[in-house]
Image 1: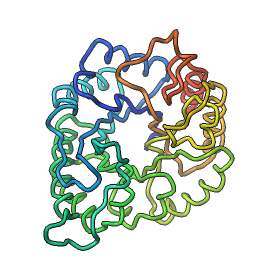
Image 2: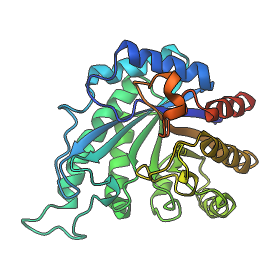
Image 3: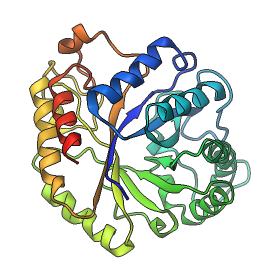
Amino acid sequence: MEFVKGMTWGWIGTRGQWKTTEAEHSMEEMVDRLGVNWTAVAFQAQQKTAHSTEINYKDSPVVTTEEIYWAIDKAKSLGLKICLKPVVNCTNGTWRAHINFFDQDVPGEPSWTEWFNSYEEYILYYARMAEETKCEMFCIGCEMVQADKRDFEWRRLIKKVREVYSGTITYNCDKYQEDRLTWWDAVDMISSSGYYPVGTWDKQIKRIEKVVKEQNKPFFFMEAGCPSRTGSSNAPNDWNHVGDVNEEEQNDYYKEMFEKLDSVPWFSGYALWDWPAKLYNRDTASKNTDYCVYGKKAEETIKYYYSKK
């Protein structure tokens, strides 16, 4: 498989923000300024709490089907390969990794059976879209740490996805979870969120390598990156970390990550985090403390690295 020189586009995927002149400008800038060959088109459905069993993927604030078709068409017009990435969030702000239910179904209590029934409907809807639009990859889930243990349900879902989608199937596990899933053999490509602190890459690469060799599957980071804030390189997954704007720290983080992974023969690339559909004004990039690298020092580092791959 070719090296994935990618960036995640469009998050958080809120209705009305796609299929606009701003969104068109955003995707064009992403291609021009980073030199990407892939994008993960990422959007959210919502459930009310971590213990709710109904997933809303049809109503606001979820992007419309028309908007997703537009994003796919636009990416293809720019020569990009696409990973379609539907994600679940909790409306009350609880991180999706904490979605959880009793191990065994109990009458009168919300259950894994009920939740997976709703989740399957959601995922299969977009798996059919990915097939129809010829997306090269489809991601069946993202950072569902508590749900990861449900081996039977994930295998059943993957089987159903394969009935409607013929491309590459991946699952985006969370950081530190690569060696904890029992069903990697069921997907085509292993991916994870590579938010690892500076100075720890050698240890994490060694740990992940065991999984990759055991499964004999390609591997890439479906997410990776660091906010441009002082202190974020030590906790790149913490989007709530408070720190002063620091482009140098973000840029140094990228340089170390690229250096450490560049010589790893089994590593297949990145869908970096992230590039929103509505960009901030480039003149204000020096004041922005988020993950997006638009107009920042790390933007040049990414483009230089991708140009060599």
